[in-house]
Length: 360
Image (tube, rainbow, N blue to C red):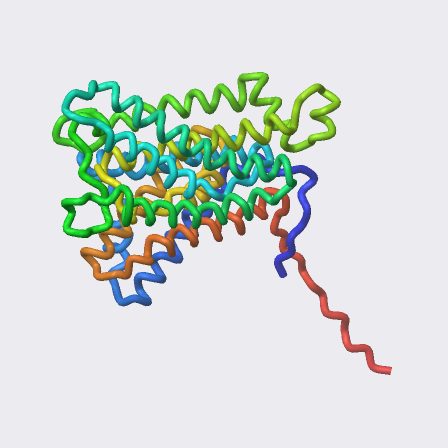
């Protein structure tokens, strides 16, 4: 029989192999799922793992999904490494989009091209302000940041709905719940004409380098981790656990707000009730699949983006339900948690011997 045996020390090999093993198991379960739904499994896997990367234009579309996921996941990685559990990045994404959208709506024909910088800055400040509510309640009243940040997601969604159904609704929009379409000068500049990939890709790549330097090469990053993981030791060393809380949450909120600004002033081009896309929750999976490391998050964000695009293609071409994307995301997280058990434990085959029946 198989038995879990505690390892003398955590396995570095399994720490790296666990995400790959989880992906393999997810693919195998996906094959069985396609067969149960009466669809060609090879065709189904093609929708998820080949179509999103088959051409340059496909990579351009993939970047639009990967950029917000990567930015949010980087901020969450800083939080989680600091032992601050920000589960409300989706709300910070929404408020960042709302703030950025409001600034974009103030533009007119005489506005300069620097309006784009103002839009992105508004998104960052909006996300930081929303994350600051969680930090304040945790700092002053010792409220649980998991519950507070999560509940604020629903408040952000309701606030967005109020604004697009009310004060920010386009008066000439035939009563549809949406803002005016943003002027061309407010749109996030594209990298190359003809493709939808924009400068958000460059911002995301720069954020990877900055995140790596912060986490692993700076005194501030070390202080963040110590302040979050061991407050008593941090105080002894002169680090502030309170500063770690505020820094981690504000940085995470700002990254999520930046992602919201890039989304609303990029592909969407206006505020609608459909701004919430689930990126804030999916980025939690991205962060853990990427092992809370900037480089790992880059690859896991691409993988999660493939799930998003593959789900849309499977819905339109194979007639599968929209929920198939969430199913694959959930499978990946579930199998990752299961495979992570092998970091601290190893499977061992134990032979069980049955005692002979001794007769008197």
